[in-house]
Length: 188
Image (cartoon, rainbow, N blue to C red; front, side, top):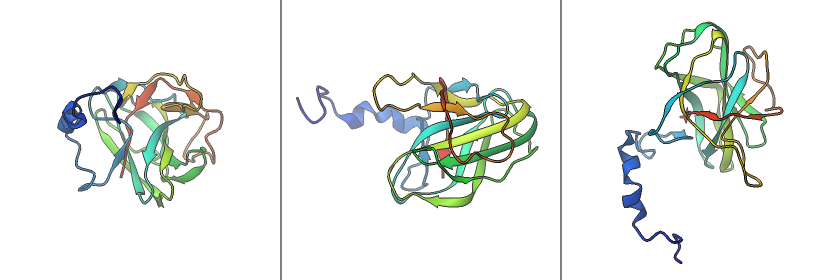
């Protein structure tokens, strides 16, 4: 067995198809994302007023100023409040955006929302990027389907929490529930 286990090929060749995904080089355009840009589809967000948070690996030294989610085939109808937020691995709020109130969010549209305070990451690890929308129709999001954790210590790729949320993120991610639909998030 080698450092690569039983794999005998060249990892760069085997993973080369990921380079065709069109994502910019992170050394040129800083970004972190939770999913590759292939195999994505239209997935449901959370219910109105419920927060969806997704696991996102961030590295020591990263500065996160914005979170981007992309609506899929369904636009937001009559939004009343929505926000994005960044939580640490323990589920404690680090920063949130201003309440986006009734700002329109059309179908198939990337929505980049700035955090009120940029966050300098001081420890590499899993963080949670969150989105909550109160609307008569919550938009669907670009994302994928994830499996429920099965191993001890494994976390949710996506989860829901809270209810009747408006424009303020909760101080913690309280009683998270597994969510099969995993939205794509891009942190810049």
